[in-house]
Image (cartoon, rainbow, N blue to C red; front, top):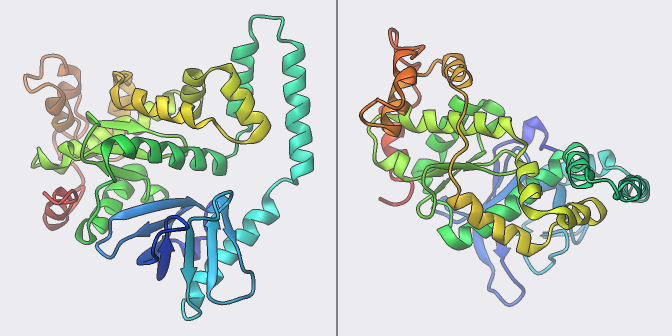
Length: 341
């Protein structure tokens, strides 16, 4: 479930309390494609809320009070004069509720499906069949929620995502240039713990700050983002997580709609350390051609000698005319300082 188009990129001032005993602090609240982003005044992201899991605690009263479903200790307070944001959130929540399957019917359908699979569990194909079933039935809103929860576990190791007021817009422009306008909020930059890129359920792509800071050409970072987006299309990101988690985590997701915290913790470590799955050469070159981007800067960033990436250099679809600009020089400089460097 995504926010209505007229409300995307809406911002407001709010009071955020991360936990019951914490002091409220003034923050900037931004409505994105499928999330509410809580940022400090410098633009650094503090928390991400999936729109599908937001609850209003005091309908019809002011100030408006919201919290994540199942976690009333973390709250967002919007004053009456932020009526545009309040109306936007409430309208999206009503839209989500209207489209959401009735709990009883959905639960019954899941139970029947799981029961049928368990009945066939004598056969060796049960784990694979259950995984395939989970990949088919888990909706996008739940995938986004799982991706945000997984990002929370990753940032325990890597630190908070990078962000400054000056770099926020260039980062969105970079995402839109490579991934498309609808995914301008899907890039997250990490300063530590990540070699180059990774992807999460729900569409988030993680990008190492080294790819911004160590290269003068934005085509390098754009190439890595493109390659990661193609890698995510090769194998369902949720399926990758469930294959790591095992049978019982898949069953828990299907029956309760959630994954054990330990599953997310262990998979977060795997994501940061596992080798990258290669993307087929034809798919890579086709992707570079589609977004009018040179492949050779990306190739030489992978291997400065060019020997192991020669097909990417020789097959560069934009070798003659060059790339359609990724970012302006000023925006690229701003983005290179996203982690405060």
